[in-house]
Picture 1 (spheres, rainbow over the protein chains, first blue to last red):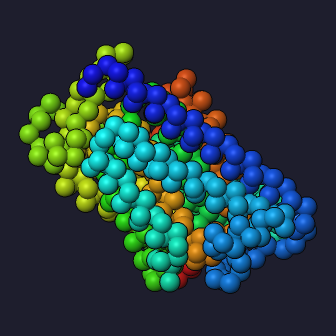
Picture 2 (picture 1 turned 135 degrees about the vertical axis):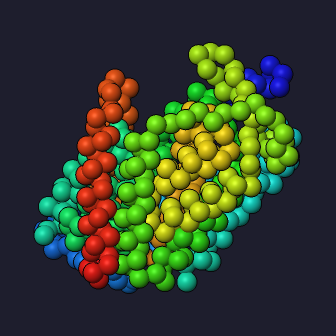
Length: 129
Length: 278
C-alpha cells in the first residue's frame, strides 16, 4: 500500500467517525426532546407493559413515523429519533461502499451493496410477518 | 406505577447497566433486559426491543472513536456483516415464533457464558501465516498501529469465522444484545486477529447488525417509545462515563463481583423461563 492511498484511507475513516458521532448526537437530541414532550403529556398515566400487545405501538413503519412526526406528539418524536439512530450505522455502510468505489475495490462495493440490500429488504417490512 | 416514576427508575437502571456494561466489557444490553423483566415486570418482547436500540447507540458511539485510530479492519467488518445481518434478521424472525420462556432460558445461558468469557485470560493467537486462500481473495489481511509502528497480521479460517458470525448475529437478533463475546471468539480464536483489531471491528459491526434486527422489531411493535427512550438515553450516558473511568481503573476485581451478580440474574431468568413466568 503506497503512502498517498494510506492517507486517503485515514481521511475516509475520520469522515466516517465524524458521521457516526454526529448521527448518535443528533438522534439522541431528538429522542430527549420527544421524551420531554411525552412526559409532559403522559407523566401521570399508569404504565402497561406487563403483556406484549402487537397493536399497542402504532408507529411501526418508516412511513407512519415520518407522517406523524410533524404532529410533535412525544411518542412520534421519540420514534423519529430512534429511527434516525437506526439509520446511522446504515449510512455508515453506504459511505463505506462509496469509499470502496473511489478506491476501485469493486469486490467490496458488491459486498457492501449486499449488506445494504439485506437491511433494505428488512426495512420494507419483508421479514416482519 | 406512573409513567413518570417508571421513566425515572428505568433511566437510573439503564445508566448503571451502561456504566457496568462498559467497565466489564459485557455491554449494556445483557443487564438492562433482566432489570426490565425481573425488576419491573416488563414483557420480554418490549425489553428486547429497547435493548437493541441501546446496543446501536453505544456501539455506534464508541465505533466513532475507534475508526479514527485506524484499528478497525473495514474489509473484515464489511465482509462479516453479511453473516451478522442475515443472522440478525433470522434471529428476530425466530423470536416471533419462539415462546417467551425459551427466549429467557437462552438469554440466561448466553449471559452466564458471556460473564465467564470476561474472566478468561486472553491468549494471543495472531499469526503471520498468509496461506489462507479466503483471506487472500477477500483481502482481509491487514496491519494496525502498535505504539506507532504499523504491525501486519494474517487472517485464518475465513469460512469458520463467517459461520460463527452467522450464529452471533442470530443470537443478537433473537435476544436483543450485541453478542460481543461470540464475535470476539470468531475473530480472536478462529480468524486469529489481534485483540485490538477484533474488539474494535466487532464494535464497528455491532451497530449495523443491531440496526438490521431493530428494523424487524420496529415492524413487530416491540419498540415502544415509552421504554426505548429512557433505556437508550440511560445506557448511552452510562457507557460514556464508564469508558472514561475504565481508562484509569483496574477492573479485575470488579469483573469477578460482576460475573457473580450477572450469573445470579441469569439463573433467575432461566428459572422464570422454565417455570412459565414469561
